[in-house]
Figure 1 (tube, rainbow, N blue to C red):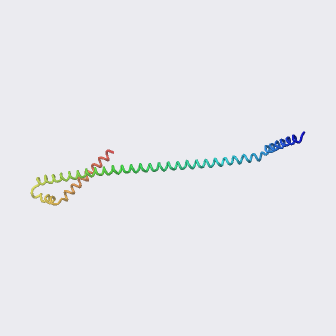
Figure 2: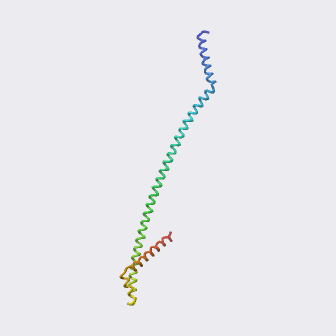
Length: 159
């Protein structure tokens, strides 16, 4: 054997011995593998946290938008109810005015009819009421209150 061949064979044996030694270092390989897995798990944990954070922000944004939408709808509904209440109030006011005018007219007619049928001696009080409009106003107010109460009762019975 020549020196050269011996040297080549020795180098191959050294490489083989080195590779066998590396394969035999089970503890070192295991620790390297564990470190790699630990790094990979850390990276996955960061990704999961970021995903959960994004999902939380998304849910929070949707809840805020839903709250604003609900608030806007409630405001619109309140405005509609206020408008309807105002219209109903105007209707009741107009009906009360009509009823008051009608009651006033009927009271005047009734007073004239009573004046015609009373003897002259009983007409003194009637003429006094003509001078003061207070009795007529009271009668008209009572008629208005009665008409409003009757209308309210009719509406309540319908519902």
